[in-house]
Length: 286
Image (cartoon, rainbow, N blue to C red):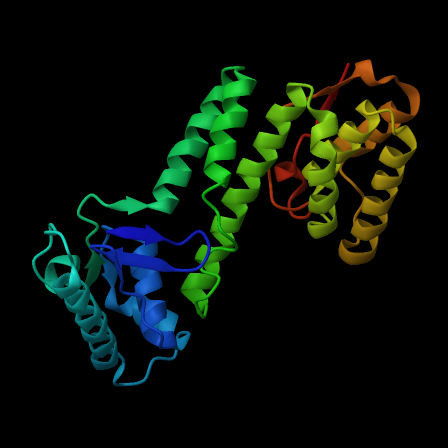
């Protein structure tokens, strides 16, 4: 089995797609795919499908969607050119007490591979091997083909999962850029960071990295302009000033040469808002 959730939903059994076209069965499959090899309670599936207000027929309807998915799986098994580990759909979409489980049978799940590679990258970063960290995190990010579950209707459960996945992607991206900065690749990063700060207009860590890359590329004025744009956005949209660390970075760029601005390993978060205690540390002033 092959499961892909980092982009459009993809589930293949013996090389054949089993993704349904109907929205609600697709939601059921997406939730099972996200929690592959784990039992998903029927109540959780009902919560996803009917946003906390399931009809009296919810359990029967969920069973109907599961049967529809099994029918697709049976068809895939019947079309398979090579022998498969599973012999019938019930081996793949398993009924367990109180719920259902998508049994991968040792297949591949892009989310699991992303988490494995990102974990290796974080450990390399902690160990000071920035070149290895940059490679491992770049490999992890390359698994993404677009927003998670891009073609699936998102109920409450899936919306939370999609947001969580986007945050893990941004954390990996933040650390990969940090590793590249530590390797002196500031000029190479400028094009990518220009796009990112436009897309994530309140993400302080990315803006701090952009300021460093600009400053180290001899574009001090543009670095200070980037800070001012971020400050204006934060004040206007969130009613808050940039973090103390980012303000210190701005002052340092005003007063120091590039050689005195050294990156500090940030605590990556997806945006500049929230509890000040959890906001990223962007740089250490030498």
